[in-house]
Picture 1 (spheres, rainbow, N blue to C red):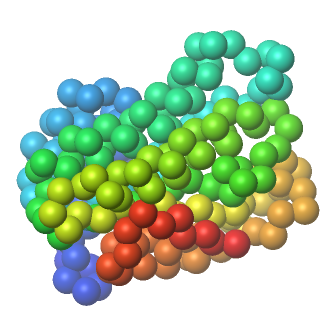
Picture 2: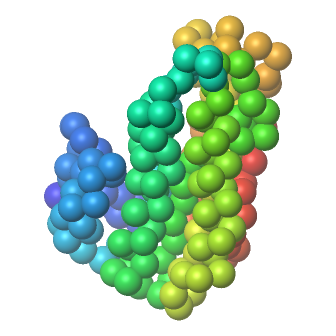
Length: 185
């Protein structure tokens, strides 16, 4: 169930809807509970899951807006809400957001909404988490590795390699700060 030990003594457990050690649907609170039951005590939770609809504002349905909020904001809040009483006092949470929280694009109005909501939650939760638990967000621009797919959408944005976002995640897990938005630009 657990991956081989990693650098700095951490053991990485992967969880997703498909193809991971532990099955979880982060939009289902019972599935989140089952995931925490399955993995037991962990010292960090990092989440990079979630998608949003890309449609012009005038064509968005209320169901699409709700699905975006549920899939990328509410689900991450639920990971922290359920994790807080289960994880040790020194645990950390790292949630990914993105540049669209500050740089909105046409047909992407739901992405800034949910990224901004997650970032606001990170700042608010940082002062309420129990013990010395910490929470941060990693907010990258578009990834170099995805420019062939998303390059036209992010015209004029400076891409960054995924490795830089990984380093920000490590900084969040290994560091001692909380309530921060770690920009990767």
